[in-house]
Structures are given as structure tokens and as C-alpha cells.
Length: 158
Image 1 (cartoon, rainbow, N blue to C red):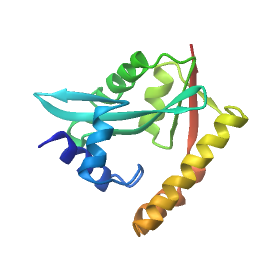
Image 2 (image 1 turned 30 degrees about the vertical axis):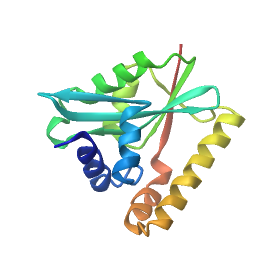
Image 3 (image 1 turned 180 degrees about the vertical axis):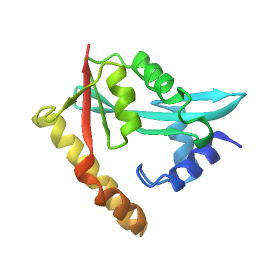
Image 4 (image 1 turned 90 degrees about the vertical axis):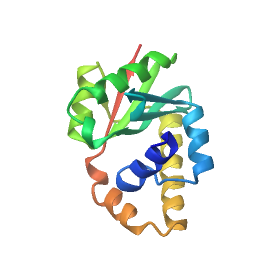
């Protein structure tokens, strides 16, 4: 399966992450600020990196179902961290397995990343919500909204 098809399939099935876009748009995501892990020339894990003020956020972390609980998530986050040259890295999750990986790599739970950073994170949430509304993706809105209180923000300073 081609990388873009894998990414669109994973985004369609995983309702906790951003909605999929067109093949052309997803191809652009695959060519820029992201990290991919392969097994036998097949993509099995993916994560995006976004600037948030003077920091970088790791987002849209995906690991193929067949490769979960085998260390690929940790390898992926380590590789992402190696490619980021900023003082502070952020990651938001409500997934206990991802929280465990982040803790093991030195991330600490935080409540307040700063005014400007918090403002940008809120704008990103609003943009995602509008995107889901435009797509009539109410199942995704429900899935993400019902557990919003369980999200935790993690950061690591270097």
C-alpha cells in the first residue's frame, strides 16, 4: 500500500486524530514536517511536527494496529525528538500508552505552556473543529469531544 493510502486509511479509522484530507494534501504532509517508520518498505508509524510559537508540537501520532505494543511508538517519538531543534517540545494525548511513552522519554505533564503557546493551541483546536464540521464528521467530533477532559499536555525542555 502506498504511503498516502496508508495515512488516509489510518486517519479515517482513528477518530482521535485529525480528519483525512485529499490525497494531494496528505502527500504534502508526508513530504514535510513529519517522521515515518518503515518495516519491510511499508510505512507502519507516522507523526507530525508543528510550530507552536517558539516551540514544536508533536501531533497526529499513528502506529499501525499490527505494530502496537512492540516499541514502534517509542522509536517514533525518539526519532521525532532527534529532528526537533527547539528548546521546548509539546505533545497532547489522552491515550495512556502514549502518556507512558512520553514519561519514559522525559516528558513532564504540564498545565500551562504560556499565554502565546496556549493561544495557538486553542486556535488549532478551533480550526480542527471547523474542519470536522465542514466535513460533517460528527462521529469524529463526538469521539474527540466526549473525552476532552482526559487530555493531558506534556512537555520536555532541553
